[in-house]
Image (cartoon, rainbow, N blue to C red; front, side, top):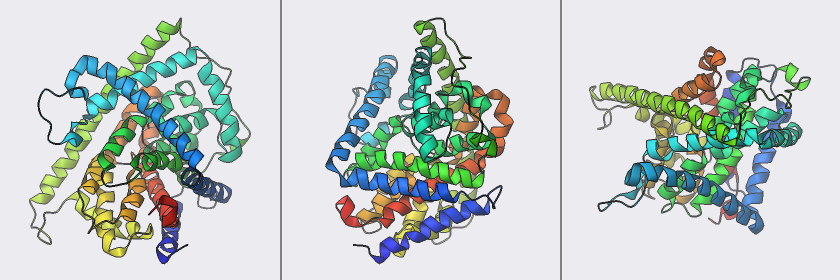
Length: 426
């Protein structure tokens, strides 16, 4: 049964699409067919994943595979860094949620994925997969093989790790395809961070693992859609193709592929880590400057607080009650400035009087993405290594990609708000 709160979420769909259309590089080329198709795909996936018991079992299986990759990586990291990487603690831990250290739990995954992708490329498996994904996404979202593969890989691997799978093709992508990869990367999350989100949300959101995994899956079509609205597809994409038989990246052996892939991953991980330190430090400096000003409403000014006021209408448009939209909008601001980790932790500490169970579920989808200021630096650093000849192009696209990724998760949140409570057992 649909209630006014569900109809209210239609405003979120219109708002996110409208904002992207306003900043489009060609407003006359709105992708109507893609818009309808992407939204239908999202709604269909939600109904499938939460409406069929068999699909729920499959969802748990995929989640287990992602956790297996993360656990395998963590085993290697613990061998080097010990308890800092999440092993047995030498002292009592009063707050396990604070034990997630980005440098030891996320960056090592980049090393493993780089090595794995190089090995799969050497074995020709990655090229075969690109052809398969190219067929599927050409029929659904109109993507060519390599960007289709990177989009699918990004759902579970992350915003930098996904493009690694098609590194040999990055210099051949159109400007629209490059923008789409960056935007989709910011709209989704990685398998390594999904486990951390579930740990944070487990006590406040029933079936947290299914929601987090579903959020990353269905935000990919939203990211593709909004990216294509802002930077419309190049007409040449429809008549040209990327030759998947070209193997311009070769390795002498399987061991050579693993070693070179690891070396590439190390360079990317170091660049990403250093850039994150700088961006978070700059945001903190601004907050400290704002804190020196007179308090407003009994609280000091901050970037996140100001954006919370700005984003309250956006939160309401996703189907959230107005009395809760201020708190929800604040979480959106925190996510944009201080990453989704901080936003999830703050939501887990927010009482039911401020956010009810349905609002927490919607916000889980709206927050589950890498679109934040820190990711701008991460993408610049990562793509500067992956495709250095297009660094200036990436610099010109990355801020708009952050907007597309941020609004893509809000679009996904609106679709969840559109669904009846009974579908999720509320």
